Length: 312
Length: 308
Image (cartoon, rainbow over all chains, first blue to last red; front, top):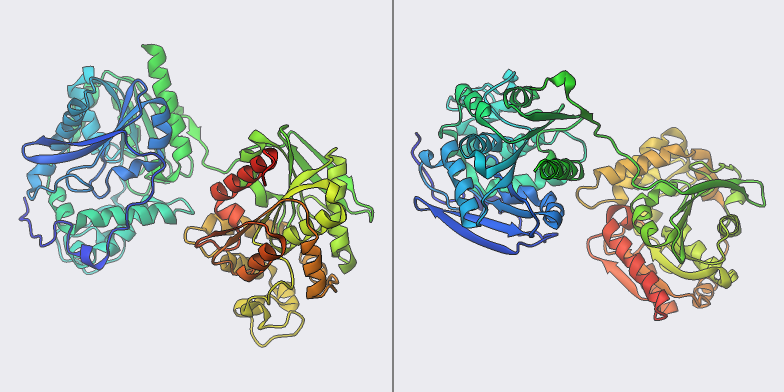
């Protein structure tokens, strides 16, 4: 656990670099609201009416629900779409304790938002770390999950590159590369971290807009709240594999072969560990394809959901 | 259970949103062969005009698939680039040759009349010339980055360096120079499209335009630059005032190729409405395709409703 040290709830770098003003949207929500669990309020939005409902699950709280802006307008033409901001970012609360940011809590928010929006069952669409909380819900509430999409899953299984292995708490001799993934650097130059991190998320050419968007969302959480999350428990490899074995719904795993955050290892391991999986490798794709390659991802999601419907 | 080896791979590479329904090559009266494409079957026909030989018909790639859902769309590679011939004598690039090419393509595609859509001087000015010399072939004009010569002085950065002189520098707009073009045409293309596509997040638009420039030839570019143009301001204004076809002018507030004053003056001379796109630079159809497409569609609708 780490002690919260926060003057501004959005972090020290917030004053230096204001988040971008709210952009115009291709599609506005039909309904929005807050759901409260243990005093923490989570902000959700609902778009469209079609069946089944698709829940676009938050990933690491370094970004919020606008990450899905390339999916919402398309998917909401065919489906009811639910999004929500992760605790720590967007319009959701920023609880000041690291225990509030565990994967279990994140999974609890998925179920709470489904309850609050009267969503009995849904297809869960996840990106990166969202796969952990998605797996918890799919494994422990199988009757509420029709299907699970895991894009660029960040999971503690499969082959991982060692490139990122710098100690988070040590004072390092360098700020270069993944050495920026360090508590002291975050506090010194959070903007520098965000720019570095998202430049690695978007390895595709012509990604300047996606990087700019994500850096803006990153400033809405700030270093101190993000640090709290770093000390919160994620899934272990054993827990992950146990959950995988319990998943009853079909799983679509999508990974870019240029993913510089997780590599393809966790995606391959996930596809091997769940009973009913399909793995798609996107040539030249990076870590956050929902934002960078929305047409491709939207069609893959749409086809996956259509396949579920056909099976029902 | 699934293994990596069994996983299908989706390629992450650009495709073409809409392929032509028919294509052809037609020979102009001076023997230059012109490659054209036809998309869709609606009415009226929209003819997407070539700009300078620095670029070819793929400059309209963000218009074709949208417009051809509603209308018949014809595009052709202007002489000097793409799949068309690249004459290297300056006489091949005078106004009359280019307006002749437009008529040649209209005839080859059995198009009695069309809505002309053009960009910059080479597109817009030739559309105006055709609307006055062959008014029965021109149903309307959408003019992007209104580049009618003489209507205002050029941007100062465009006149600082002489095109023909050996210059002491290669920096900035000194690259618009025949000697530099011969030395480093790719360097010119990169500089030029970066300058005139100055909006943030334009790396793809710039990369495309540079590729299209490099599809062409520096000899054609120099021949085009050397083509005679001897009309004075009064003659240009008289031609503009003679246009009877409905017209829509669209200009970026930050156009660094063509001064906004030219669009404003053309609007005064013709009474045509002028849409100023705030923050936009020169390459509006490529860089702001949704705005451009809707403006074209709404203009064509207004023609159909008889209230341009």
